[in-house]
Length: 255
Image 1 (tube, rainbow, N blue to C red):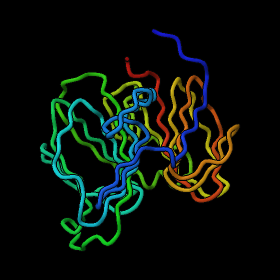
Image 2: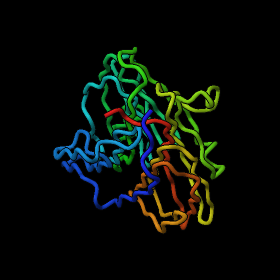
Image 3: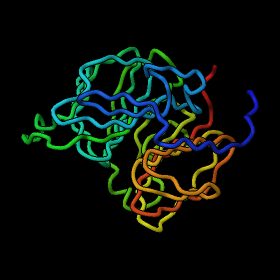
Image 4: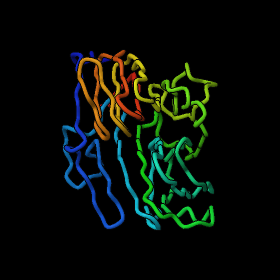
């Protein structure tokens, strides 16, 4: 096992992210995978390869496209997103409903802001969501899908485990991902509330909504991210209503 780099706290501001803008899509990328201007120095942090913040206009979305050998977690912040895939799963993802799709040997799916198909009412607003990808432990497994309602747990204001492949989280109220070294946590914070980050070789903090104060660093706003290496335990305090996503990772992508 290679030694960890020196401890570091690397703040990445929202405005510096690469973006893909189309008539129907505004997508901001924390990492360069899949963007039009690849940056070999910005392909991942720990096991996290993609952290895209997407805004999709009503009646539009991602047409059917393939994925393989990737664990994909989707977290909706506002609106609803209709999912359909080649394994027969379909449904509407909304705030508080966690979704995981395993690409495995290959899966086709679409994601659209056309919830009228399920609700009978046409969408009038964009859907705002974050999509995150981590590599699985093993390639070539069967594709899969899972979703779980965790809106009630988020009312506590603490960090809630959204998705995990770690042994310690077996049986917990979280969707399962096929990577035993990674877990995703979320918190919805009211002004003045605080949480402590876990300690791990690699952490990725993303401010999905609102503003927070990071102990030892200062103010973070919507879209800002922090990459922690060989450190953790920092206190996050909400300076207004806020929502954060935290990846805890005990390994990194082999390069």
